[in-house]
Image (cartoon, rainbow, N blue to C red):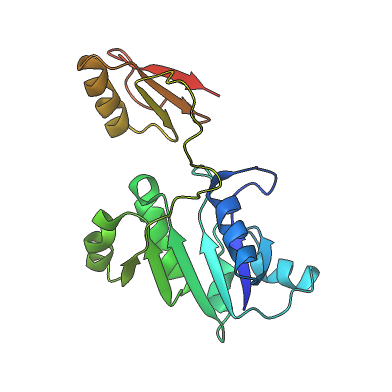
Length: 192
């Protein structure tokens, strides 16, 4: 099986969901080419990429608006989207699905499936799996009551504050800037 993996994740990043997905492709002995979301057809030609069995598209960095819209012109190839950040960029994902003409759409958050169906998109729930090479009991001493790594949205900030109100020490670690009201913050935020 040969896959063309199209993502806007930074190619230099170590870890993250992209790294886990690439490791899974390698473990299955699938061949893959990885390209960025902009000017997909030009990259295929420039890099002399062989025709894949299917194209797997995945959004990555939240701030990126580089849409692989030219994929919509590719007719005789199966196109697949796997949406992982639907809770943050739902409308952007709807637009991407329609622009690219993907035949298969997957979403990591089950609660959004009815919403996609209301937008006339047939989306299947495909949750992310835990990577046993990354997540295992390392027998470390507990440092925090609650530690979160990821994008802090308004609702997550509210949840973290509720946990802090209940007496837990909550730490959130993120690359993203603060986008929520901070005047009543009770959790500790680390911009890394």
